[in-house]
Image (cartoon, rainbow, N blue to C red):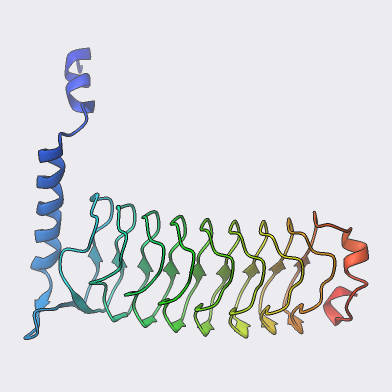
Length: 238
């Protein structure tokens, strides 16, 4: 049985030197499975995981990663050094990023940049073949957002006053609830799943998608759902 003293020792926070040593060890482990290119960049056919290491910048420049690239849970203020292309998922969530400059141009699966301090999506991947989440940031516009998102697109809990910049088509759900929207101008034309614009300041559904594959939610706005649904004519609102 573990004594109280032993338990306290186990739970004792790491010192700065211990944290740095832990980070260095994990970085070396990750780079060991990478190939160093002639230009000094690194590539990997598998996954690269640099999450939760308290990094303020990426340690090397990556070129291409065939699997997932994770750098979430750090203190990053820039994505300088991130891969140009990621075959799996890319996550830079829970950092201190204010922009996505340096992010991959193409992501084969999901892209997560939620829980940062983003004021712009400039630099976001052009193509995301899975899901894209930029929730819990400080965005006022979606300018710079991916042009193609085959999965869901979540931009809730920002400070959006417009949906200008959103992709024209989203393969799955589109969620923009809990922002400061007064209209839906700029919304995707086609949404394959649910569309949720609840908890905004909407007085009209002008700009609502032409097609919504499943349910449409618009509760808790400046006027009632019933009144909002009278402001536009859409088959899915009948």
